[in-house]
Length: 320
Image 1 (tube, rainbow, N blue to C red):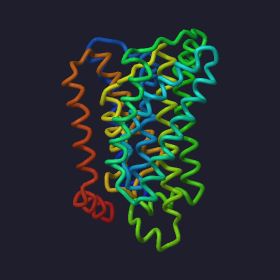
Image 2: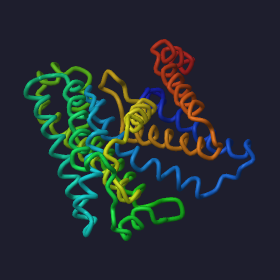
Image 3: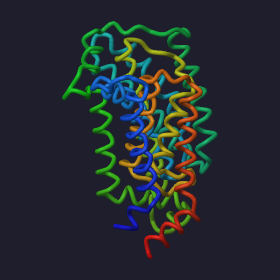
């Protein structure tokens, strides 16, 4: 138990979430505001798209890859959902998810078969998808004219949840079950730790990579579709902020940039930390630079906890 609690993939997200929850609870009274259930609901609304992006990006990072294309797939998924789901919301989501899965599978196949780094491939895909999304929309936002779907995805469930946030939580639970109860989780960490050794050990690296990027594309497209329904419009260029926040959330969730480390529930804690910080900024009317300093401060804490020298010192202290 002691080893489990001191492992970075457990310790980093736990410390991050505890610190952010304390800030979330204490910040409003300090500024003279009251913390309400609506604040929690809004934080979970922000968590809904961020969580799906973080989960998709995070599982690729566990395997030592980096899917920059998630934001492009996110934008295209939202546009496809709005274009095809005017009369049937489910049809729009299904079309978006199918497109996202296909993009991910193609990327994973190229990376696996050609044995090329994921970073340049996914960067090229990201740029191409933004161009494709802009071409589909003529460079303009597209309005979604199905008010029933817009109302449903954001309606209040059990006081502070919505269907969007519950779908995101369900995705994390499913990922935790798959990675925790099957050999897939061990194989992904093995691939991230040493790909060559994984191949020698009989791990089907190529198949895992294709599946990994397929899941990442699916989650990104689903996030874009649900957010576009919520806003009743699709934006052809969401900017870099969703990617930056997803990376921050993944690092706060205990994932290593070098691969081989990370847990779905850690990614969940990281995504919740970032979403709660964003709501703190909204409640307290913090300027953008202050919010960025908060994210940077948390990352400094993460780097400190993740430092090998500090971990060794903690182990020695616990041993005493």
